[in-house]
Image (cartoon, rainbow over all chains, first blue to last red; front, side, top):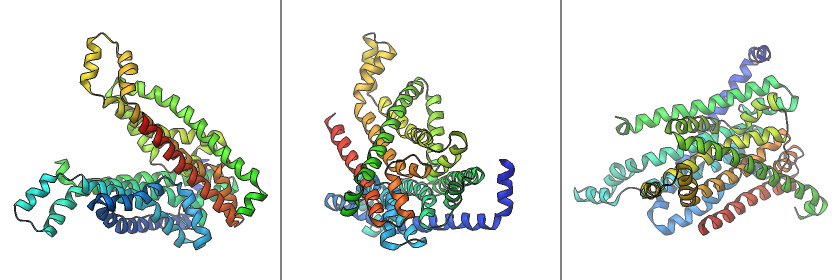
Length: 212
Length: 202
């Protein structure tokens, strides 16, 4: 079987390259969009109990809905291809980012904000120097959850024409080719673990004060 | 959509019952294994950390990849699906079980020790009853995640609601896709609500 896999890699190296880059590209794009939408929404949700109930309730439900259902449900609406895949992945990634951001902003101790006001910070300064750094650890934890979910769901997105490494697995299932299944499985697993490690390194950089 | 369920009620209901069966089988096996592992993890911090790391790595491997990797070993079908789903559940269950049990007020455990309870008695008579909410919350999360990942298991012939999704996709049968997604979403959301209600009663 190892010979089969090596053979497959040597004959399909160009294709593998595009699949890997497509997988990373789609995942990153969806993650960035989810952060751009999720973080501000999470911030507004943290402002008051009312806005929180309004914003978080639908996303709590969305978080429970199976990812495959979201992916495939978009086909009657948007057809197949990269566009519906990215849309579905973004929808799936928003809840962890949004909910964690909201919790992060609310978990900042009141005395910190008070003392920032006491030393004469303006609202804007307080936002950038106290609130955002304070909420960052929770926010990053949410973004990490979203990242792992996106990398996993991008594999499924191959089914709706999103490209990526899921193609190898689904083709392997269709052709009953064990070598393709194992290769696809290993690549997806490696990519998922690697993205987690890379994100942890970035987190450590950003939160350097925690690891001194 | 209405027409589809009129024509094929047994297909939709069959997929739904298959799905629930899959979730129940997985739940029973996962709970049995998780209880054993929790007992082990409660004995020493090191075992607990090792188990946690192992399952967190497994948990971040996408389900489709795990299915693909297990097919050469256990073949297509429900067995492979149950194994993968059980592995994922261990991460959720073990974490919430050990966190809940450890979170119990040490003063209460001291008092129990003081009146002569053994470690096992402290676990079953003090820690478990006091941690029941955390334990139940873990079970709820595990069930909901099994319902979700269970849909993907249809890609390896394990049946369930995912069958409607994949078949509908292949034949571009919109009502079938809608039934598959609506039912799996509804199942997950309603079970989550139901278990949350039970949890609040505890």
